[in-house]
Length: 234
Figure 1: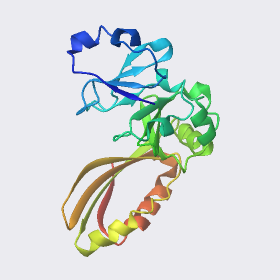
Figure 2: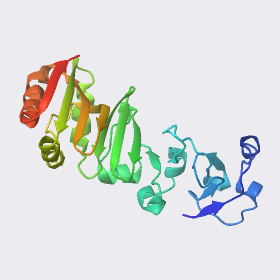
Figure 3: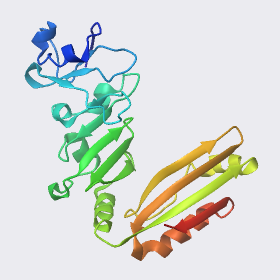
């Protein structure tokens, strides 16, 4: 994969660029980048099949690079392809992409899921507007199916607020290397967060089937029992 740097052009002029021939390129590979702004990647064009130029969809909304499924469908190992970039782009993949098949297996097409890979390490699966992030090296088809099954059950949300100060902060930095072992059917999302050199305040939201509520509450309580925290149903 190559990066081709071009002089800045206006958004209006960039929209007129439809094919590599419009920028005078004779040789290229699918997935090559044409970069007009080295500070932000929002103005980057990505080369697709037959030299078609695709605009950066920027799923982050913050000016970072996203390689859409329209491009990754032609690249067997997009993580390795783009890993040399200073900022690893977000990768969108189809459910039957070779990388997904090798890491997870065959996700049922009926799930109609959206799949994104962040930093080459985290996989986000989104179904019906609800998403969950998995560690790319600790993901399985079983975990996804359990989570998907839980989406059809009555759910509950738990809000965790925790504050770590001084010695507790040092202890938590070691503790958080290990995740809470909650059922795969549950999702954990980060809320507000603030901190300093010797303190940290976090808010996490736990969402999952109501039938597993007591089990999850017990696991959360066991994990945070030596710290200052509050857990409430919302």
